[in-house]
Image 1: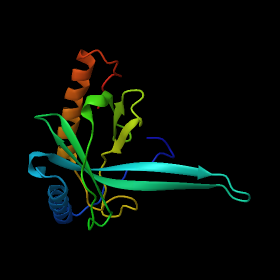
Image 2: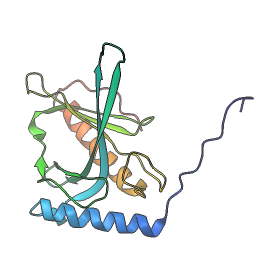
Image 3: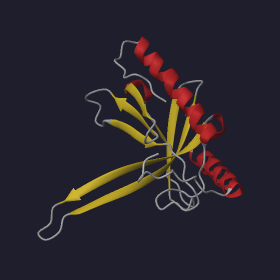
Image 4: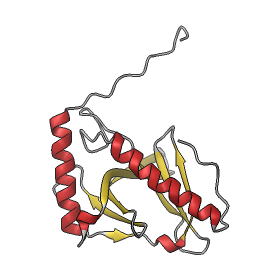
Length: 176
């Protein structure tokens, strides 16, 4: 360690609140997706930034979207349910078009999973942050610590990555 380097802080969270959050996420996912119990779930976020030049000031606005990500290994299906930060409201479930996914990557530094669609599909893909949030988070759903869920999802993505490589799609090296 150097003179000015800092030791990373441990994530502070309440284990009982974390269990309640996961139970509430399961309940909301089952309401939105018909056969929700057949999916494994975890919390994911997505951000979008908008930069606007002004006459006096430039503004940069970042919006956070919270999702309950469900995935099923039997048919390789992924579903997203958008929720609010307080876990009181949710949208209808959206099934990703897995036949159009041609590349799967993971950035361990930022805990981001990326599913890229084929060219000409209409959207680039999904970039999902699957990191943990503590009790003092400013942007995420508090007390969402999910190391086992994240590792199981990364196993799912790695298997998908290998299938796409075998099918002839060019893939970056898989990193964890």
